[in-house]
Length: 330
Image (cartoon, rainbow, N blue to C red):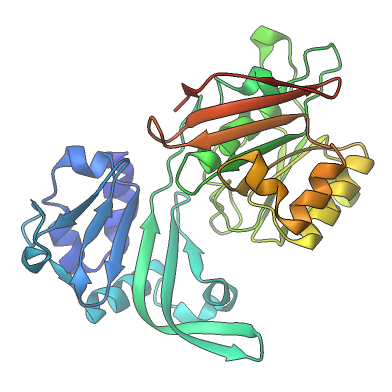
């Protein structure tokens, strides 16, 4: 992790920020999940289980008055470096409120919104950046892959829904599931499947200039920065996937596309923000989807024992539920 931060993150930070972070203890940097920059506010690093405030000399402090204060100039310079000084050439990303960097790292930003009726045209005069460090963990899905693969001889999988609050390892888990399902598991006589990925926010593949920065397997077709509902239908028509994977469903259009995929014989693995199945059932769009009993596996994550804690796996077998105990997989 530390090498990725030094090689991929430091070069796109303003010189002042770079100087400060180079002095931070490597153990702290190695645990960093997010770098939070807010105009005239302390420089903050979010780690696995805590946040730390950083001083001008790269030390940790509890007194925000002693912290390095991020300036408007820091944010402007960082945005220029991230966009290679072609900020307004990235019109679509500016509308969405995030950028994907080389290495698959994602930067969210806030500021002054320019809108037209109900649509955001762009964000300007940036006041805050959230740099989320991409954490590709090969083998992250080892603990659940056999829950997803069908236990018969069909070389197929179960439709699976991952339920997770933010920052619980959901995307890391999904990414490695894609890799393993696509490449196959020779030791288990699972030869691999054609996997179509709709990566609407660029977090699964970490696509940069059209090329995935993360390992997604040898039989994976990736649609980056594409709306989930449109992408699923496009993949079915064009790429004959056996499995479609996407992240964070919720809209009526997402649900409709999943129904079409399943009815076309395509398996689906997807995720949704939430803490438990009961909560998900209360959301109108998802409630309709769950009533159709498409999903046969529900994997529920938390941070109780750190990111990647599996709170529960619900298996639907012959319309009966089976549960597992809590365990850690990341």
